[in-house]
Image 1 (spheres, helix red, strand yellow):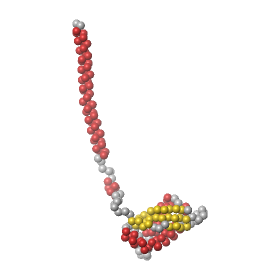
Image 2 (tube, helix red, strand yellow):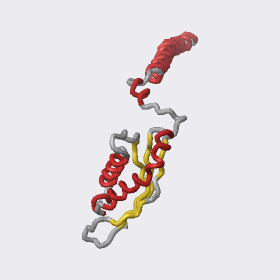
Image 3 (spheres, one colour):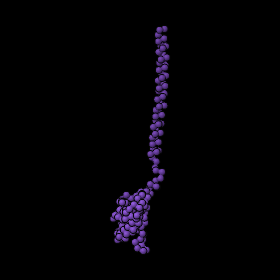
Image 4 (cartoon, one colour):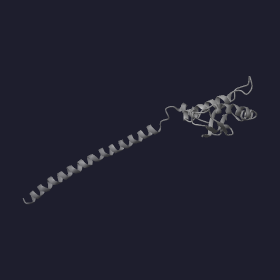
Length: 174
């Protein structure tokens, strides 16, 4: 009988170990299935979000610019003019800028008219006060006025000049 209590004590121990082993083995497939499903979900989510096209592809196409064709610019010699009195004594403006023209043909067309264009611009600039053109808004307004004045025909019945922008390269008020 001495052997049976030992056998009896060993038997429940083997049964408990067997149950624990069975529980461990039954969890393994569940864990593996969960890992596989998680990996599949992560892969599917990545493919879905990274594989989508932009929502508005036609807007991106409109903004494309031909990188091979640089803008055609007419660099004006610097202007130095006295400004209108503004209660701060005598002040002057020294400004340099470039005009963006349509193409090389337009640039060549403008060259004989440069003295006339400079005269127009000198009259415009000398009629300004320092307070009008010292702010960013004032400079933007001046650029718009320069552009509009530069586009005007040089002869009666002539065509408007092809110009699209003014780029200030130097702007000093003193």
